[in-house]
Length: 318
Image (cartoon, rainbow, N blue to C red):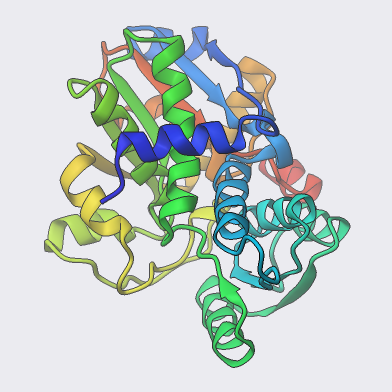
């Protein structure tokens, strides 16, 4: 099982190139929640997404394990942000990366992947198809598959976000993170429960892709129908053997499903009230608090996970 020392080691491994992002008070959300609410702005992280943390940690660990041997070729599947993080990290680690994404992934993400020199294969219809193609590619070529969430090093890097929150704000009572495959919320939960067990960890997923709310009701990981959503980074079913499920089941206090209308309203309100741009997945926690899905009267930190949104999508939402 992943532990707090693993996350602290990840932090040391990536500290030279990862930003310690701001944790800023939101007067708007604080008024709604009746308590101090602060935003952890991973939207200002390298690559404009928290995914840079896990990607760099995973590839540096891979290079460490291959010390003295030829460096491996890496492959991944991504809705966009993890692919961008892997492409950026591979460029820094001297690795060749192949990235499979849906063909309709946001251009802001696809163009950034290509700029970092990765072999971009935006050919799948859905995220699940991207994952299947990437796993087949790894099997046939011998490339190392780096999952966006089902990988301890990726999770360990993501968990460093929560370490920064607890260090800067020891009095925090609730930490809210977006949930897709569960990598971020797993790392956050391990860090929070290791540093401040009394604090609650709440996940916010898209109602259009309710993997963990459905699984928690069923008591086991289930497959769900995935509908269109502006939170493309949260859409898609998890791998059947994902290591994130036991952590979400045992360490996360609650997962809420955020309706599509609330995600869009959260994106607009974040820009109007805080003058901050975020993508659909990035505002899931903000929307959960704004729409009353999370506890009131508790000191709350919300991870704004990314800001890689196409201008055309942003304009549509506004």
